[in-house]
Length: 422
Image (cartoon, rainbow, N blue to C red; front, side, top):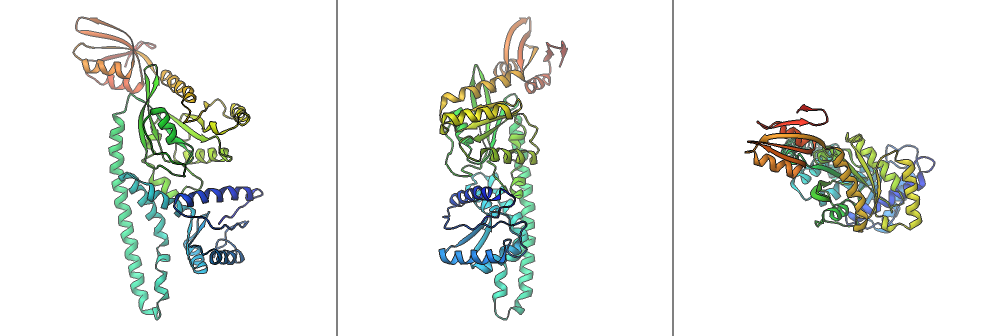
């Protein structure tokens, strides 16, 4: 069910409904019909007008449908009224996305995040679940127990929400400790609209098998792989959950800890499906979500994926638009399934790593073999000399590695550009 607004609402509604159909397919449903109404503002009773609601109910009966899905969020009262009118379950886009996330979540953290979002969505809608009490003949005697059970359920849900938040904070602390062990590595995170090909790109760059499926929200759990970039450089690349229009706010809030990987990344790779007719709208949606998450100012590269599905003329047009519209931001065009197109991305990441390195002189005791090995592994050693029991190394190193070396007793780090100890 779509409700366009504005002068070009019809085309936009068709795209939204097409996406809603793909979401329904992902959830295991089959679309048997659709209804669209142009409205200026939602109606308080059915969201749509009374006549359109009656038309919807008739379509449900004709098609023997078992479920009605609205593209916009419904209030608890609107949902109840529509269910009474249509005689079948009614859900909105937010509830459908939450249902998909519930079936796709695999890790302990992801399952808790989805449960938290579902409970936050459910809490104001509990009264609608108890509508069966009003259908009992002589229901006056049941009002008290019904209200008591309703309040009990609200209290239990509140307790569960608090428990989930506490557990997620604990998981976030454990993940923060894991991220500390990654210091010294250049880190990149894949972000983008769902089904843009982020998992395929991670697989193409790392060579490791990833779950890939041509459906919305094929993967939810963040995964990190060590990606070789050539010339001795490598990066930790993380695949994050995909974004979508009208992503439920509860879900965004719940997945903040998962997106900490993106928050701490040195660069975000914004992956866009170049073959999608609505790619620019998808790009704007992702920008909006990143801003909402406080990631709008992070260094970013725009990566148009699936270019193998474009005709040569269409790819040329896309590149011309990209050259004039990205205002100096790095823009790359590739296909995750065509290895030859991934070279420029590796080169760009290598260049960013080199740009972040500082040339330093490290003086350390010859007994500090482990520290010296770390410098070789995580830095770029330019020269090495030894004077008695002291080893002097000139190297290029990341700020994170320099900070760790400076905190080791007996190790002196001097920035060659400035000639001052660190």
